[in-house]
Length: 402
Image (tube, rainbow, N blue to C red; front, side):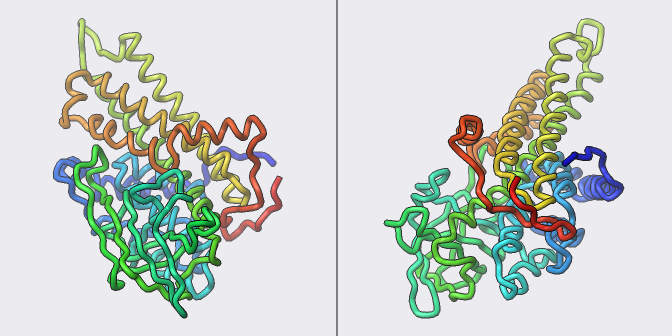
């Protein structure tokens, strides 16, 4: 099957729409928000009013029905402004809402997914714990069946939107002796007795976004708010992470593009030895390398999106895009600071913020080291994808695995 790399009028409309939104709602304020560590939920609500929070969700459930190329463009352009706003798309739409679309019952989609897709409720995803990140099977949060409910106890950490979200997709184990086979997924809402959240202060970057922890003390969750069956939580989490990694990869392209934009402007303005610094060979090398990685990374994202639009498994392609794009974003940010010289080391120019923000993405959604192992295992034949697929866009059927 051939891949058409041309953007449709709809894709271009998404690009223009989000760029206009960023110019009006984010760009004039982001430096101050970042310096003061302010996360502005009202901006996220305006993103919902624009249809962004339900971008990839089917119109049947209140979403915009965008294809994955459009969803990727949206994430890229938001992170081009600041990582905090792409993070909202990752956890709300990618990790939570798309997971509900794939695994939820009709009743769960009506009660949980619809208000999220319509932008009336903000949602997040809670898998990581103080003692378990990449090794999700080591989680200690427990879920004990008690009649028509489960009782949850434990703690989650490094949860984006922890102090802002209305809805939580939380993972807990019904039997620790079963390892990953005991993990089960639950839908929780703010205000439930025993559920508390807090904000983490002192982060290196993403100061305009909220990150925190969740404490669960005898939180009673009705059986009808369990997502999937008992023991299916690990499969649910991995399918969610496939979606989250895609948003992170696309966003990283946007961050690298922001680094290139800033560096080109500065290289044309700054003069040394009687000429623009853009005329100097080693500055050209840094600029060219930024552009090279952006083009390659964007194509890797579109390859993953093409498969997702057809309901095909894209774990390998998404992992490769996430690994490459996030590593390149860090390098682009480092080079952008170098191009700016001493000014790049200050908050007077945005590249200092880009560098701080870039580092998080090579850690969350699977470290670069984990993705190195994943890609090596595919190449060596140690790993193969099964039949687990992502939800396609409404116009596409589920296809058999290739």
